[in-house]
Length: 601
Image 1 (cartoon, helix red, strand yellow):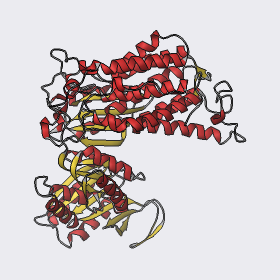
Image 2 (cartoon, one colour):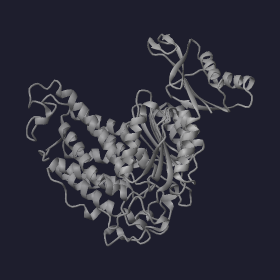
Image 3 (cartoon, one colour):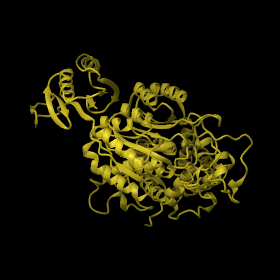
Image 4 (cartoon, one colour):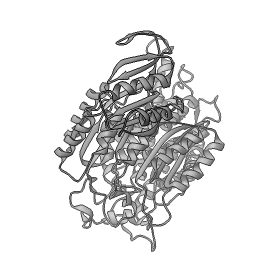
């Protein structure tokens, strides 16, 4: 839909820019995914950028919606503002500071992947400049130039080890070109866009992994797309054709020809076809310093509430654990992204620094973990993967270390089917076993499985009702055997595992064990309330006795953060003393909602 060009960068321009960026990334998403060979060839850069901007746009729309509630009669709100008429703030809408602040915050909390996290910091860097004069209704070309420069510099500062030939290079080139431009916002935006296009076209000459694949940097391509939307915001016209910055040899994200499938690709005649500099080593936008390093197997991302001093210490610790470290944000809220071998240690570092949440852990796979330094095109999909919904950070790390792709479900925040589909895509496998680990998520998981099947992925849904059943299923998972045999074995293991949980009642309620009051400790076995008491340890012991009365060989205990630390010691001692030949395994679940999860096999 055509829109009225904006003369100044005001709140309405921010809203327009977010909407146009989202549309443009939606159109370019598959192409950007397809050229994603760096820092890890996981084929999701376009999707991650789209989801990041989607979160930013939603935050801006929420700010406008709040103002429009009191906007008066139709036509008086900011949606009716003209380029030469009153600004949104003059018409009762949000200020520029409110709009860009919402955009930056939305991108921060919704950032996905390496490039999405860096884009969030670029937007935050712009917002820092544009909110300095909170009473200003708009800014001009000079203000936009300053915003672009601060965006590029703050993004570099957020990256532990910046590398040229990435989105950081493209952002710096955009800022340089914008500074050299004179005139209004349209002229500055156009210059920044053209500078970014030229820098993007040159990225294969800076990174040999791009040159070998015959592609430009995927994150940089996404930034050029966003800057093109900025030009359209101020001119009303989509900038020129994107051919000079797109690839001449498209790299498919799911090659079927094995490690040498991309050997016949040629970069073409474009400006990015120059040979890589001697000694050039792919290292990731913030990756390892040499190509001989075996790249980590996990991507860990989480939001973190922490102060500046704690985050400074966290940066040092995570930098020692892995690479591709990007920490963005400020004012007490941060988005942390890192590639590591020990996902649990990365999460624990966040717990020590503050309060991590919305934790996402992705297993890259053994073959593709070295994709950034490998002499080949984007990796072939794994044969098989496991995607599992887990209720706590500790379990997320446990599942990830076992090779699964975990989807964190916070209490009261169950994942949507779209999140499960994204997890299946991140797993990057031809066959996927899906473990919902919650009876209430079965229909959501089924919808996700159906969607994944339409994309050519073979999916089996095992109706696990608890994370302890998922642990049992994962313990017998063998990717080397036939898919059907593996699914049957995992289903049998899950079905043979009785599950229980100990929780605190939130309100008075009728249960199968009688009436409970708010604050009572409840013991649920196989989903039904079986015990009501006042002491966590006593209730847990009663639950365990009832479960073991029917027999069992292995007890799994998953302790939540709010449970007494002595409860597992008491239960372990009870099992040793009262039940011969029964083993006990204890895991830390983190903020999992339940005080204790119990599994008996």
